[in-house]
Amino acid sequence: MSQGRKFRELVASEHPLQIAGTINAYMALMAKAAGFKALYLSGGGVANASFGLPDLAITTLNDVAQDAERITGAVDLPLLVDIDVGWGGAFNIGRTIKTMERAGVAAVHMEDQVAQKRCGHRPNKEVVSTSEMQDRIKAAVDARQDSNFVIMARTDALAVEGLDAAVERAAAYAEAGADMIFAEAMTNLNHYDRIKAACGVPVLANMTEFGQTELYHKAQLAEHGVDMVLYPLSAFRAANAAAVKVFEAILRDGHQNAVVDTMQTRSELYDYLNYHQYEQKLDALFAKDK
Ligand SMILES: C[C@](O)(C(=O)O)[C@H](CC(=O)O)C(=O)O
Ligand SMILES: [Mg+2]
Image (cartoon, rainbow, N blue to C red):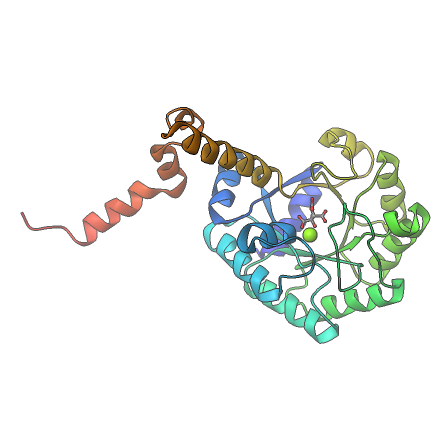
């Protein structure tokens, strides 16, 4: 079964499907072990973590594809990838879709912001016209090889044009061929009901922290028409705060004893990596004559 098909089946069977943001392959292994069934590669995360850059349209297709491929190479769960605005015109978008499919990705989300995009939860966003975004979607749909590969359209319009416009856009994007809708930066639970009723396809809610949207319970979201709940950077933010504490403690104390208890142990690390199995294989392959 293709990864796209797996993703679609999960969306249909989980109410709602919770999707874990995993900044790299090792995080993906941990999210799978914790029980998540679908994973996410954040565009902001690639910019921040892999490049030390802000989420402001600085990273490119190849940057994101490389990180995506590292995750799909390590974990077999379906991966949703943030492709920002698709990185160009129709043929660029087509190339993006083909590259993501080749990288083993299940689904992508592409947004209706202008090329100089911003984080969805920051001020001064601008969106392209509805018809321009419909063209982006048509180019993406046309380029996919597997008809189950998921093209999700994200609308950032709520903050720019208001709810009615965002609802209309969601419907227009589904009509243009988007399989699913990412309702970005909603400020009320009822917004999801409106979007869902208008577009008639599965809807994603973004539970990113410190943004415009309250951190709702998954059951509340499901009651309001949400099919997928995204936690794009939750583990990344937590790991970052932990790292800062460790750096500060080492410099302050001259040793790391005060923070060792907060660390994942060597044996836990090895469990996630299946380390011992690799070692045993080495030993079996290259047995030393004693
Ligand atoms: C989902 C998102 O596009 C991402 O890149 O992870 C961001 C998340 C964030 O900045 O908190 C967004 O919502 O724009
Ligand atoms: Mg993003």
